[in-house]
Image (cartoon, rainbow, N blue to C red; front, side, top):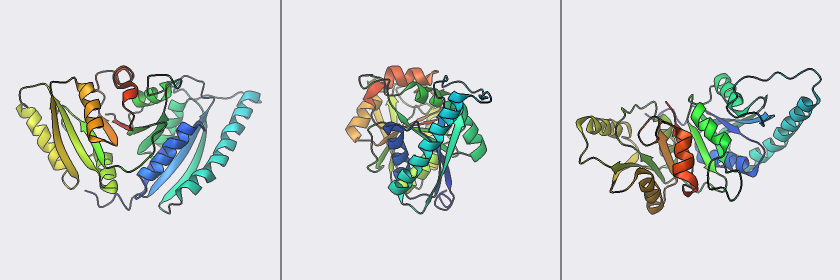
Length: 288
């Protein structure tokens, strides 16, 4: 299952607006994958005041002064940022490229993912102000909703990597699991010697036949890494997840498939209204 993860280069895109939050997410990504061969693409989408859900490519008018200025700012910023990141890493397993894109962040990411066979997006998160209760900014929420080509890893602005000992994976056992969808979780668990804690917030008296079968599939997939099953009862799903993360001191929470019962039909609604700022650890979202 894991024979290739150490030899194959993982291709990761790191969006940046040159903020401290973005730099923090870049550093987190570097540390998280310290034992893996990686190609990191540091991406800046300039003229980022466009709607984050805008996916139509933008065509600048010839001689457009604002475009020329924004392009220079983007390219100069990446030129300045690259050596800072390389100095921070000093890892012979890592390579870096910079990408400057005149478009909305969403289109820039979709274009980069398609052209560079990207396997993961890692980005910083923040609210609109320090007092904002919402953990995730609008760009992050839009990316989580509309990028379905690869997993999205969102890192809170002040969260620094200090190991990945425990990964919590909430599930209702309603979906049929497959190894390909869980591949990235397996990779980072193996690379960081992590334990995957499978959490079920129990509502039913007992698992039905289908749920038991799906649980068995999950056991088969996670064979070869450390994992454990956990059950909470008599508590709302979101409150249970928060409580478990706090009590177990988890380092990462994984949500699989936004159509699952634990995510509801609208991922941003779930994250904004239910997770809020109480979940101050990185979040990995794996869309279908």
